[in-house]
Image (cartoon, rainbow, N blue to C red; front, side):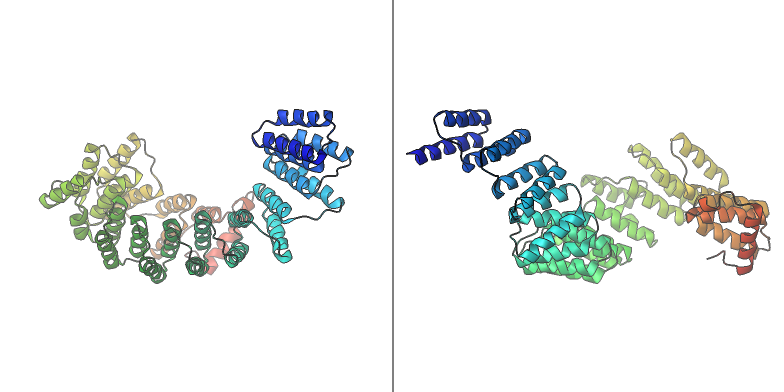
Length: 505
């Protein structure tokens, strides 16, 4: 009869705890004592578990203290509940103290203890400790839950510890555990980003080999990484595998491949991919068109770019295609306009480039720094200095700051004018330009001008070299180390550079 009463009381206390009525559970425990039924280890364990779940850690400690005084030392289950509650509350250090107390009482850590501690170390970002504990579990043959694998692998990836992460993924696969889509994508992306493309490809095929469905995001991450690295044959192999297995390839996947081929200037393959998109019922979007038009312009195929996009409304053929694009709700944006303007400027068609700029304004598309940089470059090609200056002023009125490329184009324009007027740049001209480029971090252009200066028989002086060297050292992050150097130091550097003639390098 006594045993039945005890079971009944414990069941009611547990039920009250499950539904969150912890104060009533305590009262019921007191009533239990009043009726001559002493709480057991099970009673206390149930109370601790409920209080931990309610995040009432202080009350849980009080119960543990009481049960110890009553001759019921906490068992592994109570300790594990305490550790879990403390870790959930963000008190890893206290959880470790509880674990140490547990061990000192002669209790062994269980798989549950390890899994909980791993969760705590992962939450606090301690990748090395989490990795060590997971390895200990593997060596002991303990039961590791999927959450522990997942948490550790994610943390290792965030610390760029990909070799260890791949090792744990292998352990998951041996246990037929499927890493979630987020982890698969993170791993593949991280491996590609750090140049481990072959490992990323191998891992992708391992997922498939285990029968796991690799989602579009993971495949896109792999395709993007391969295309960024110029590994187009491998990317094409992945595409064939995706389609061969009946998986879906969306517009983003095709755009990634088109981007990769475009970088390699393989426009024929690009347009084949776009045709394949259409055949599969996918509609090329603005991004698709932007990639292709950029590829055409980069290869100076202006005549092919215009029919493809058709942005010049004053041309009858262009107007027709432009209206067709508008009808498809594919509005050209600043990027597309800039590609067109840049292409027209490079081919010397300044009037058409200017018309496009006006067209941007009519449509409410604001020109940006790149727009004006292209236009000023066009003016420099045909030595229209005044127009270039006006564009610079107009740019400032628009609230846009010229960058190094803008100013470079303006300088080129001025040099063209000097040349047409038979005014040769002298030592001062070159020194000013070299100093400007060097201090702006464009050491390549500064070096080119320095070599050009010497080729023309203009001898650089110490000021010229000093201007160049300051920029050179600044770009390499060592200028600070030479601050305070006296003239003798600079003279020694200049003398050495003159002798070795390594300025171009």
